[in-house]
Length: 126
Ligand code: FES
Image 1: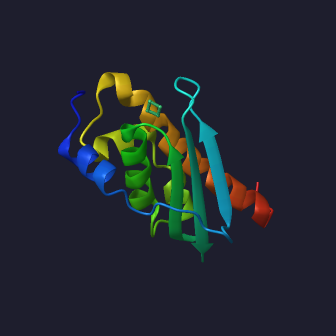
Image 2: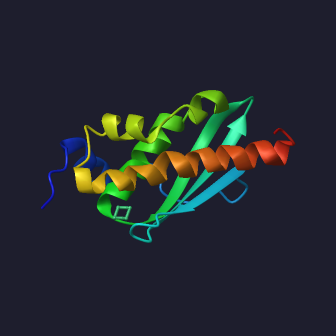
Image 3: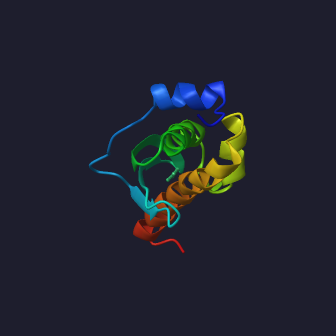
């Protein structure tokens, strides 16, 4: 059993914001080359603020906890603030991840940022 923080276990057991947004303003999907796990983020944006976030993750427990934490961190933030959330921030918020699970945190912020980029592209912003 790897040494997961209580926060990781809690988010894994009760992930927030699981699901899909059918009319999402932005969608970001990434795959992890290390393990083949997949993560998709859906965002709604109102007045430059992320008003809703949902995710679907086919991955390990750490990846699910990371997605859940990322969704909470993004909610209510401006798109600029969301772009500044790093993978290290996510791991830190989760109380750390075991070294062999750090790669799992890479998916989280990447998928979120991709969703924002998709949103911007749809808005015609570079
Ligand atoms: Fe694949 Fe964690 S082992 S994301």
